[in-house]
Image (cartoon, rainbow, N blue to C red; front, side):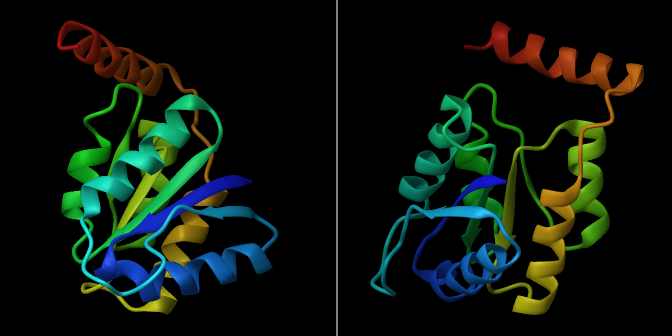
Amino acid sequence: MNIVIAGDHAGYDLKGQLAAALRQDGHEVRDLGAFNRDPSDYPDFAYAVAKAVTSGSAERGILVCGSGVGACMVANKLSGVRAGTCHDTYSGRQGVEHDDMNILCLGARVIMFDAALEIARAFLGARFSGEERHLRRLAKMREIERRHE
């Protein structure tokens, strides 16, 4: 899968570990930064990942900041983004299967590498179910976006 990954200084180490492991899994991973541990601002990286996903240059995205929350909030500002902060494999998989989640947000200060990799693999391995009830809910989300653009 063609994915983008990014994170601020707090997510720098975990982002790098995830990118390397996901490449070994056979994914095409484009790293959008940060490229060092110098203090940086998560909105810059969340916006870059969200733009890549909504433009179609990446199928999915992964964001890593301290908690996962701030990056998730920024990513969800863009129409067409369905980002979720997940710290367990059930949410990482179910977010895609039921809600068509396209960006996974992780907190580097919340979980360790092994758990983050399991969650990322669950996220990337999941597919949207296309069930009527999930399609109906997704349509309602899109309508809400349209009314508030």
